[in-house]
Image (cartoon, rainbow, N blue to C red; front, side):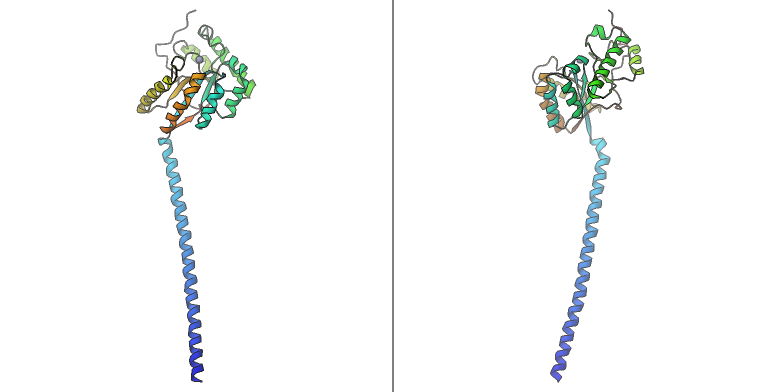
Length: 269
Ligand SMILES: [Zn+2]
Protein backbone atom coordinates (compact mmCIF):
# COMPACT_ATOMS: atom_id res chain seq x y z
CA UNK A 1 0.00 0.00 0.00
CA UNK A 2 2.79 2.37 0.90
CA UNK A 3 4.57 1.41 -2.28
CA UNK A 4 1.45 2.21 -4.31
CA UNK A 5 1.18 5.66 -2.69
CA UNK A 6 4.84 6.36 -3.41
CA UNK A 7 4.40 5.21 -7.03
CA UNK A 8 1.32 7.41 -7.50
CA UNK A 9 3.18 10.38 -6.03
CA UNK A 10 6.13 9.84 -8.39
CA UNK A 11 3.83 9.41 -11.39
CA UNK A 12 2.05 12.68 -10.52
CA UNK A 13 5.37 14.49 -10.03
CA UNK A 14 6.68 13.32 -13.44
CA UNK A 15 3.41 14.25 -15.15
CA UNK A 16 3.42 17.75 -13.60
CA UNK A 17 7.09 18.18 -14.55
CA UNK A 18 6.25 17.40 -18.20
CA UNK A 19 3.37 19.88 -18.19
CA UNK A 20 5.53 22.64 -16.70
CA UNK A 21 8.40 21.94 -19.11
CA UNK A 22 5.96 21.88 -22.02
CA UNK A 23 4.59 25.28 -21.01
CA UNK A 24 8.04 26.84 -20.79
CA UNK A 25 9.14 25.28 -24.05
CA UNK A 26 6.05 26.62 -25.78
CA UNK A 27 6.71 30.10 -24.49
CA UNK A 28 10.33 29.85 -25.51
CA UNK A 29 9.32 28.88 -29.07
CA UNK A 30 6.84 31.76 -29.09
CA UNK A 31 9.47 34.22 -27.98
CA UNK A 32 11.94 32.79 -30.51
CA UNK A 33 9.34 33.28 -33.26
CA UNK A 34 8.62 36.78 -31.97
CA UNK A 35 12.31 37.58 -32.00
CA UNK A 36 12.72 36.38 -35.55
CA UNK A 37 9.75 38.55 -36.65
CA UNK A 38 11.33 41.56 -34.97
CA UNK A 39 14.63 40.71 -36.61
CA UNK A 40 13.06 40.33 -40.03
CA UNK A 41 11.32 43.70 -39.55
CA UNK A 42 14.62 45.20 -38.56
CA UNK A 43 16.22 43.74 -41.70
CA UNK A 44 13.37 45.13 -43.79
CA UNK A 45 13.78 48.54 -42.24
CA UNK A 46 17.53 48.46 -42.68
CA UNK A 47 17.03 47.39 -46.30
CA UNK A 48 14.48 50.14 -46.89
CA UNK A 49 16.74 52.68 -45.25
CA UNK A 50 19.51 51.54 -47.59
CA UNK A 51 17.18 51.92 -50.57
CA UNK A 52 16.14 55.42 -49.50
CA UNK A 53 19.75 56.41 -48.92
CA UNK A 54 20.59 55.17 -52.38
CA UNK A 55 17.75 57.17 -53.89
CA UNK A 56 18.87 60.28 -52.06
CA UNK A 57 22.44 59.82 -53.18
CA UNK A 58 21.84 58.82 -56.78
CA UNK A 59 21.15 62.28 -58.26
CA UNK A 60 24.54 63.43 -57.00
CA UNK A 61 26.46 60.29 -57.80
CA UNK A 62 24.86 59.70 -61.18
CA UNK A 63 26.70 61.10 -64.14
CA UNK A 64 24.71 61.66 -67.31
CA UNK A 65 26.04 61.82 -70.83
CA UNK A 66 24.06 62.59 -73.97
CA UNK A 67 25.21 60.74 -77.08
CA UNK A 68 23.99 62.40 -80.27
CA UNK A 69 24.22 61.18 -83.86
CA UNK A 70 23.73 63.57 -86.78
CA UNK A 71 23.11 63.14 -90.51
CA UNK A 72 21.27 59.80 -90.33
CA UNK A 73 19.64 57.49 -90.62
CA UNK A 74 22.08 55.60 -92.82
CA UNK A 75 23.08 52.00 -93.50
CA UNK A 76 25.20 52.25 -90.30
CA UNK A 77 22.24 53.00 -88.00
CA UNK A 78 21.50 49.35 -87.21
CA UNK A 79 25.12 48.78 -86.17
CA UNK A 80 24.94 51.83 -83.87
CA UNK A 81 21.63 50.66 -82.39
CA UNK A 82 22.98 47.16 -81.71
CA UNK A 83 26.00 48.55 -79.88
CA UNK A 84 23.83 50.93 -77.83
CA UNK A 85 21.60 47.99 -76.93
CA UNK A 86 24.57 45.96 -75.66
CA UNK A 87 25.31 48.71 -73.12
CA UNK A 88 21.70 49.56 -72.33
CA UNK A 89 22.55 53.05 -73.60
CA UNK A 90 20.15 55.61 -75.02
CA UNK A 91 21.07 58.23 -77.61
CA UNK A 92 19.47 60.99 -79.68
CA UNK A 93 19.44 61.01 -83.48
CA UNK A 94 19.23 64.37 -85.30
CA UNK A 95 18.00 63.19 -88.66
CA UNK A 96 17.87 64.60 -92.17
CA UNK A 97 14.53 64.55 -93.93
CA UNK A 98 15.64 62.77 -97.16
CA UNK A 99 17.49 60.13 -95.09
CA UNK A 100 14.37 59.43 -93.04
CA UNK A 101 12.54 58.78 -96.31
CA UNK A 102 15.35 56.55 -97.54
CA UNK A 103 15.62 54.49 -94.33
CA UNK A 104 12.16 54.51 -92.71
CA UNK A 105 12.81 51.12 -91.07
CA UNK A 106 15.82 52.56 -89.25
CA UNK A 107 13.69 55.48 -88.04
CA UNK A 108 11.13 53.01 -86.67
CA UNK A 109 13.85 51.00 -84.95
CA UNK A 110 15.32 54.14 -83.32
CA UNK A 111 11.91 54.95 -81.83
CA UNK A 112 11.04 51.35 -80.88
CA UNK A 113 14.30 50.98 -78.97
CA UNK A 114 13.53 54.08 -76.91
CA UNK A 115 16.01 56.58 -78.34
CA UNK A 116 15.46 60.29 -78.79
CA UNK A 117 14.60 61.76 -82.16
CA UNK A 118 15.50 65.23 -83.39
CA UNK A 119 15.62 67.11 -86.68
CA UNK A 120 18.62 68.23 -88.72
CA UNK A 121 16.80 69.86 -91.66
CA UNK A 122 16.48 68.84 -95.30
CA UNK A 123 19.34 70.01 -97.52
CA UNK A 124 22.33 70.11 -95.13
CA UNK A 125 23.47 72.89 -97.43
CA UNK A 126 24.76 75.96 -95.60
CA UNK A 127 23.74 78.40 -98.32
CA UNK A 128 20.22 77.01 -98.66
CA UNK A 129 19.50 76.38 -94.97
CA UNK A 130 20.74 79.73 -93.61
CA UNK A 131 19.46 81.78 -96.59
CA UNK A 132 16.72 83.35 -94.47
CA UNK A 133 14.72 82.81 -91.28
CA UNK A 134 12.02 81.32 -93.46
CA UNK A 135 14.30 78.80 -95.19
CA UNK A 136 15.64 77.53 -91.86
CA UNK A 137 12.13 77.27 -90.43
CA UNK A 138 10.78 75.54 -93.54
CA UNK A 139 13.51 72.89 -93.49
CA UNK A 140 12.83 72.05 -89.86
CA UNK A 141 9.06 72.01 -90.33
CA UNK A 142 9.37 69.72 -93.38
CA UNK A 143 11.62 67.32 -91.45
CA UNK A 144 9.20 67.45 -88.51
CA UNK A 145 6.27 66.50 -90.74
CA UNK A 146 8.15 63.62 -92.38
CA UNK A 147 9.16 62.15 -89.02
CA UNK A 148 5.56 62.42 -87.87
CA UNK A 149 4.31 60.67 -91.01
CA UNK A 150 6.76 57.80 -90.48
CA UNK A 151 6.48 57.32 -86.71
CA UNK A 152 3.51 59.37 -85.49
CA UNK A 153 5.91 61.28 -83.23
CA UNK A 154 6.16 65.05 -83.35
CA UNK A 155 9.51 66.22 -82.06
CA UNK A 156 10.62 69.79 -81.45
CA UNK A 157 14.29 68.98 -80.89
CA UNK A 158 16.53 70.45 -83.57
CA UNK A 159 20.20 70.79 -84.42
CA UNK A 160 21.02 73.11 -87.30
CA UNK A 161 23.64 72.04 -89.89
CA UNK A 162 27.23 72.71 -88.70
CA UNK A 163 25.89 74.05 -85.41
CA UNK A 164 24.14 77.30 -84.57
CA UNK A 165 27.20 79.56 -84.65
CA UNK A 166 27.83 81.62 -86.72
CA UNK A 167 24.87 81.66 -89.11
CA UNK A 168 21.93 81.23 -86.78
CA UNK A 169 21.57 84.86 -85.79
CA UNK A 170 19.27 86.13 -83.03
CA UNK A 171 16.43 86.76 -85.49
CA UNK A 172 16.62 83.16 -86.77
CA UNK A 173 16.62 81.87 -83.19
CA UNK A 174 13.55 83.90 -82.34
CA UNK A 175 11.62 82.50 -85.30
CA UNK A 176 12.50 78.89 -84.47
CA UNK A 177 11.75 79.49 -80.81
CA UNK A 178 8.34 81.02 -81.64
CA UNK A 179 7.47 77.83 -83.51
CA UNK A 180 8.32 75.72 -80.48
CA UNK A 181 11.65 74.32 -81.69
CA UNK A 182 14.33 73.54 -79.13
CA UNK A 183 17.86 74.13 -80.30
CA UNK A 184 20.66 71.74 -79.33
CA UNK A 185 24.36 72.18 -80.00
CA UNK A 186 27.10 70.17 -78.21
CA UNK A 187 30.05 70.56 -75.85
CA UNK A 188 32.06 67.55 -77.00
CA UNK A 189 33.07 67.49 -80.66
CA UNK A 190 34.14 64.00 -81.67
CA UNK A 191 35.51 65.13 -85.04
CA UNK A 192 34.47 61.67 -86.15
CA UNK A 193 33.97 62.97 -89.70
CA UNK A 194 37.74 63.53 -90.06
CA UNK A 195 39.42 61.18 -87.57
CA UNK A 196 39.97 57.60 -88.68
CA UNK A 197 39.78 54.44 -86.56
CA UNK A 198 39.72 54.84 -82.80
CA UNK A 199 41.14 58.39 -82.80
CA UNK A 200 37.75 60.07 -82.30
CA UNK A 201 37.15 57.99 -79.16
CA UNK A 202 40.37 59.30 -77.60
CA UNK A 203 39.43 62.88 -78.50
CA UNK A 204 36.01 62.45 -76.90
CA UNK A 205 37.48 60.96 -73.72
CA UNK A 206 39.94 63.85 -73.30
CA UNK A 207 37.10 66.40 -73.65
CA UNK A 208 34.86 64.49 -71.24
CA UNK A 209 37.56 64.47 -68.57
CA UNK A 210 37.76 68.27 -68.77
CA UNK A 211 33.96 68.61 -68.53
CA UNK A 212 33.80 66.34 -65.48
CA UNK A 213 36.31 68.59 -63.74
CA UNK A 214 34.07 71.56 -64.62
CA UNK A 215 30.94 69.68 -63.41
CA UNK A 216 29.23 69.82 -66.81
CA UNK A 217 27.10 67.19 -68.53
CA UNK A 218 28.78 66.03 -71.74
CA UNK A 219 26.76 66.31 -74.97
CA UNK A 220 28.72 64.43 -77.60
CA UNK A 221 28.43 65.25 -81.28
CA UNK A 222 28.91 62.19 -83.47
CA UNK A 223 27.73 61.17 -86.91
CA UNK A 224 25.64 58.26 -88.07
CA UNK A 225 28.33 56.54 -90.14
CA UNK A 226 30.27 53.31 -90.33
CA UNK A 227 33.59 54.31 -88.73
CA UNK A 228 31.75 55.87 -85.80
CA UNK A 229 29.70 52.69 -85.41
CA UNK A 230 32.83 50.51 -85.60
CA UNK A 231 34.52 52.29 -82.68
CA UNK A 232 31.44 53.00 -80.59
CA UNK A 233 31.97 49.89 -78.46
CA UNK A 234 35.23 51.37 -77.14
CA UNK A 235 33.59 54.67 -76.20
CA UNK A 236 30.65 53.01 -74.47
CA UNK A 237 33.02 50.74 -72.55
CA UNK A 238 34.83 53.82 -71.21
CA UNK A 239 31.58 55.58 -70.30
CA UNK A 240 30.17 52.51 -68.56
CA UNK A 241 33.37 51.89 -66.60
CA UNK A 242 33.32 55.52 -65.46
CA UNK A 243 29.76 55.33 -64.16
CA UNK A 244 27.98 57.34 -66.84
CA UNK A 245 24.28 56.89 -67.57
CA UNK A 246 23.78 57.29 -71.31
CA UNK A 247 20.43 59.02 -71.68
CA UNK A 248 18.34 60.41 -74.50
CA UNK A 249 17.47 64.08 -74.75
CA UNK A 250 13.85 64.58 -73.75
CA UNK A 251 11.49 67.29 -75.01
CA UNK A 252 11.67 68.94 -71.59
CA UNK A 253 15.45 68.65 -71.13
CA UNK A 254 16.87 72.17 -70.81
CA UNK A 255 18.41 72.87 -74.24
CA UNK A 256 22.12 73.48 -74.58
CA UNK A 257 23.19 75.78 -77.39
CA UNK A 258 26.01 78.08 -78.35
CA UNK A 259 25.59 81.73 -77.47
CA UNK A 260 25.95 84.20 -80.30
CA UNK A 261 27.73 86.90 -78.28
CA UNK A 262 29.26 88.87 -81.17
CA UNK A 263 30.03 85.78 -83.23
CA UNK A 264 26.83 85.41 -85.27
CA UNK A 265 26.36 86.97 -88.68
CA UNK A 266 23.96 86.65 -91.54
CA UNK A 267 25.26 84.33 -94.23
CA UNK A 268 26.23 86.48 -97.19
CA UNK A 269 24.93 85.00 -100.40
ZN1 LIG B 1 25.19 67.50 -90.00
